[in-house]
Length: 330
Image 1 (cartoon, rainbow, N blue to C red):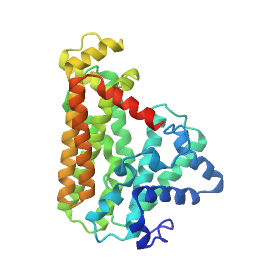
Image 2: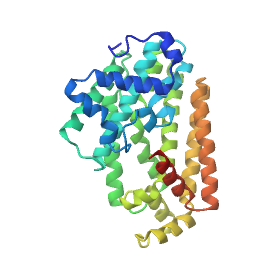
Image 3: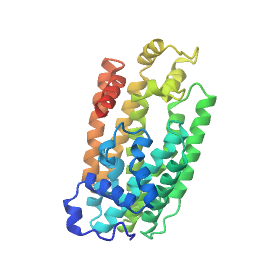
Image 4: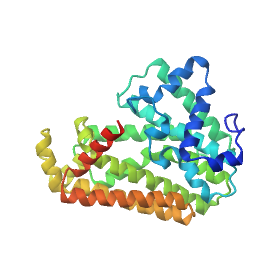
């Protein structure tokens, strides 16, 4: 195991929450950097415009599986040592941070300054060192972050090219292009599970669980953010609506578009699709005896089902809900 994890005692892990573990891993990572980079690393959430004021990562991403998935999964892996849990959390949270950094730069939301590029390079270096320390020899984007980076970049490019060329899309095309964008959720969970001794059948359940969780979040995000995405010319919900109703004139007037979206029922269908993914993730987690992950998936399914029902009754509810949630966080 690497130097960041060697001092862990079993009692430390048992007393930890996922927030403690995630924020502790980040502090140790920052402390491992050259002194000239530490200040830039501490300001990374601000630099990426993920928060308007300095906050620990666990306060920025409230869902425990977003940054702390291996900690939540650990109950299904009783042979895993506390040091292995922490190393897996370290790899996972650094992998997610690196992914958000790359997305922000690719989307043009932040400038790729030399300081930001150096910090993200260090994040990826530490991420890769953590995952390599397991020594399980997994190959491909479901086990290796470097391969996952390449696969995700290719998937994002394919999505951008499709959106630039097509005004409409089928649900099958949307999901087909969305699945490869989720590779960065796999490596820590898969490597951690393999190192803990899971066989091929159980590893397939972990993979299915990770993909279904990620797709549930993807579909829900594409439903809640469709107006903002449309303003940037990349709303999948609008393309799904145009496929169903006929492309006609691509409406730029948001009020007219809201009415047309409400009539199409696309936003509700995206939410119901997210529910199905969360339910599939819960089933896979239950099969692994990962009851804490299953409970999280069940909560997400219930919440999303309620959002779908409210959106069906009052179109536009989901957009208002998301804006209120973002304002509350700010």
